[in-house]
Length: 400
Ligand SMILES: Cc1ncc(COP(=O)(O)O)c(C=O)c1O
Image 1: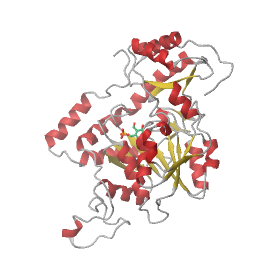
Image 2: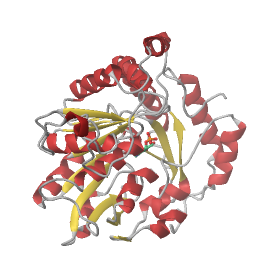
Image 3: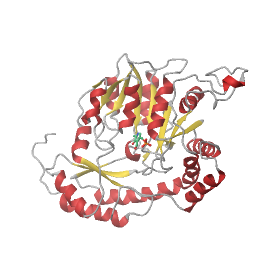
Image 4: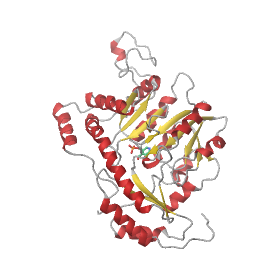
C-alpha cells in the first residue's frame, strides 16, 4: 500500500532480543519483563510500572484494583465521568464492574474531553473521571487533575494512544491515580501485544500486581500492606486474596519492550517532523478540521485526524473513494462516538449535556497513519487527494 495506517517499528535489536529469550528458555514472565518495568518507570518518572498483556488488560486490572483499596474503594453503582470518544476497552471494565457512566462531549479540535462540561457532569455519586488523550494529543490533564482533587475523585488516565506526549513538560500517563499504556503493534512502541499500568500509589500497585496474576500473593513483597504473610510456605505458594485474572505478558514482549523503549525518543522525533509537515499543508484550509494541541501540550502524534468541516457541503463518501483510489489507508477516529455502538445497550449510562462534537467526528472524521519514518511523499499525496476531492460550498445554515 502506498500509505498504510501502521508499519513495524522493529529492527535487528528486537529480533535478537526475541532470540535471546527463546535460547534462554524462560518464555513466561521473568527478568525481561521486570527489566522493562524498571526502565519504563524510570523513563516516565513513576514509582511503579506493571507490564500486562495489553492496554485493555491494564484498564481492566486498574479498575479492579480501585475496588479493593482499603480506603475509599470504588463500589458498584458509583458514577464515572467519561469522554464520548475513546476505545471500547476504555469503557468495558467500568461496565463490567457495575459503574454508571456519564458521557460528556469532546472538543472538536483536540478530540479530547471538553473540560468546561465537567462541573455540570458532577453528581453526588461521582467517584472518578476517566481522561483519555486521543491519538497522541494531550487532554487537559492538569485541569482534570485539579477538578478531581477538588472533588475527591479518582483520576484514571487511559494513555493507551499517547505514549511520549507531554503537557507542560510532564508526561501524559502520569497525571492519574492509575495510568495505562498500550504497546500494541501500531502504537508508539510495539511489544506485539502488551500494556503497562503505571502508578505512584504502592497499595494500588500491589493490588494490581496480585490481580494481574490470579489474585495470588506470590508476586508481592513480604512487607506488602495488602496482606499479611504467614509462615506456612506450602499454603503461601498458592494463596489467593483477590478475584484476579491472568493478564501477564510474555517474557518475549518484555524483552522487545526494553529495545523499543531505547528507540522511543528517536521515533517520537520523526513522528513530530511528519506532523509538522501535515500541519503546514493543511493550515488555514477551513474545509478540514485537523487535531490541534492545547497550549503547553506536545502531541506524540499517533496519527493525523481530519474532520470535514460541517460548515461545508462536502460528502465524506467522495473523499473516502478518492483516498481508496490513491491507495491511502484511513479509518474511523479511535472508535468514533462510543454512544453510537450497539454495545451501549448493556451499559448503565447517561449523558451530561448534548453530545455534538463526538457525533461530528464520528460522521465526518477519519484518520491516516503516522509512522516512525519519514512520510513526506505520503503526506503530500494525502494533501493533494483531499484538496481535489473535498469539493463543496460553504453552507448558509449548518445542521449537524
Ligand atoms: C484509548 C485506548 N484504550 C485502550 C486501548 C486498548 O489497548 P490494547 O489494544 O493494547 O488492548 C486502546 C487501543 O488502541 C486505546 O486506543
